[in-house]
Image 1 (cartoon, rainbow, N blue to C red):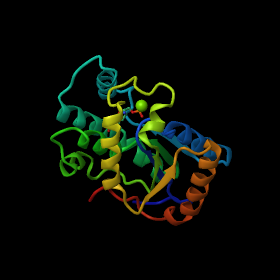
Image 2 (image 1 turned 120 degrees about the vertical axis):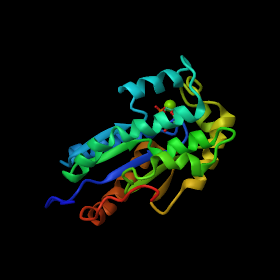
Image 3 (image 1 turned 90 degrees about the horizontal axis):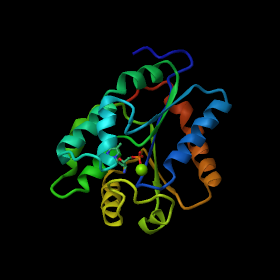
Image 4 (image 1 turned 120 degrees about the horizontal axis):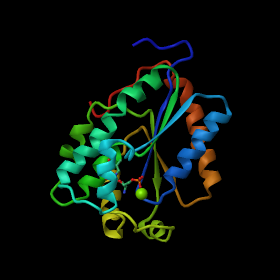
Length: 212
Ligand code: NYM
Ligand code: MG
């Protein structure tokens, strides 16, 4: 595809177990992009505003039950429905910062009994591949002591430990592991400098496809 003169936007994903501060860091990075005049868009998965997202939201809040394979596919469909927007933004030079992505999909389902990583990856195969993934690493005991842990499905210590194990299997060279227990401004500085270094390298390269 044609890349504009200013180059494409970069695709950044934040990942990790619950209560690691992903949303805070996402917002801080988006604000940094805005204040420096970079075009930026912010996505969160699950996107609870769509029809698919509403069923996911109800499931996460424990207001409804869904079969485990079925809800896995809904999470994936909820990403695919955002793909036309994401690719258009990236191609037009807008960077996209995502709070969770396909790695969450795999980690949270593969943490369930009877699921394997290969099966879990398949529905998300071919999604736009993030140029970088920031993995906010936090020990379960520290996450549990943070505000409002335990309100939604999956927010149980034993399950989060299993999720963390799957994430370890998913890590690749495009991941940066960030110690999430530090001061949020310190973390932001580290993320910001990593993104700045990366930016020029990816601007004129094609966006890759995930797990292909
Ligand atoms: N989650 C999130 C999944 O189980 N599969 C997915 O594909 C995604 C994107 O939803 N506990 C889980 C992880 C979280 C929960 O996310 C809601 P958040 O960031 O708390 O809104
Ligand atoms: Mg949550």
